[in-house]
Image (cartoon, rainbow, N blue to C red; front, side):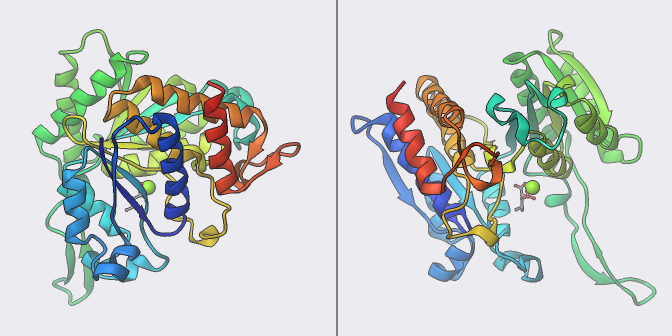
Length: 357
Ligand code: IPM
Ligand code: MG
C-alpha cells in the first residue's frame, strides 16, 4: 500500500494526522504500508517555492492513493493562478485525471439535532453527489482577462464539456446508482446552456444501457430548492464541476456540519484522492479545535475504494458512530449535554473505539 499524505494548509495537518493515526490502528503492524508525506499549498510554497512542487506531483503519481488535508490561504484569489495555494488542488486533480468526485451526504442519527433543517426532513438522509471534477468552466479554454472593444476591462471563462467527458462520468453515475437504490438524478441547466443540452442528451443516451436505473433530470436551480425542501427524494445526483461544487456544500449542511463529510476523487481504476470536504478553516487552525471525523471517514473511503478493504473501512465507520453515540463532540457539532473534545482527543477516541469492534 503506497499512500501519499498531503496535509496542506490550515486545519489540514491536524485532521490528516488523526486520519493517519486511525489508519495505522485499524490495519495494525502486520500490514506493509508506505506513507510518503508531500507538501502542497502554502506548505509547498514554503518548502519548494511552488504550491504544487514537482516532487509532490510525482509522489501522487506513484501512489495507490492520496490522503489530502486541505489547501489554500486567506486572500488566495488575489494571487496569480499558478502560485495560488488553493489552486494546487485543482492542478493535482487535472494532472492525475481525478474526474469522478464522490461526495456523500449522510446523516448520522446521533447528529439529528445538529442540522438546521427540521429533523423529519433530514432523518435517514443518505445521498451521494457525484461531481465531475476535471472539466467545465473550471478548466475550459479560453479563459482570462482582457480589454473589450469599448476599452473596458473584462474577464471570461468558458463552460465546456466534450461528449466523452460526459459519457465517462455518466457511466460512473449509473454504476454507482446500481450499488445503491438505483435512482439517478442528473442536474444541468439545459434550458439555457448548449453545453448542458449536450450533457442531458449524453446522460440520457448512456442511461439506455442501464434500464434498471431510474433516471430523472432537474435544472440546477430546482435541484437546489429540492435539496432544501425534500432531500430524501434523492439517491445519486450526477452533475458538472461547478454545479457539483455548489450543491455539495449545500448538501453537506443538511447533515449538520461540513466537518463530518468525506470525499473521494477517483481516476479511472482504483487510484483516488481522499479529502475532507471542509477546507482549511484558517480561523481555527492550529488550535486543536477542528473536527477530524471527515478526514477519518475519507481514509475509510480510501480503504474501501483504493484498497478493497471493506471490512477495515466498516470498522472505522462503526468506531466513528460509537464515539458520537458516546457523546463526544468537537465544537462544530457540539450539542448541550455532550462532551466537548479537541481534534486529538477525537482521534484518540476513534482509535479506542476500534478496539471494541
Ligand atoms: C471544493 C473546493 C475547491 C473547488 C476549491 C478549494 C478550489 O471548493 O473542493 O469543493 O472549488 O473545487
Ligand atoms: Mg467547494
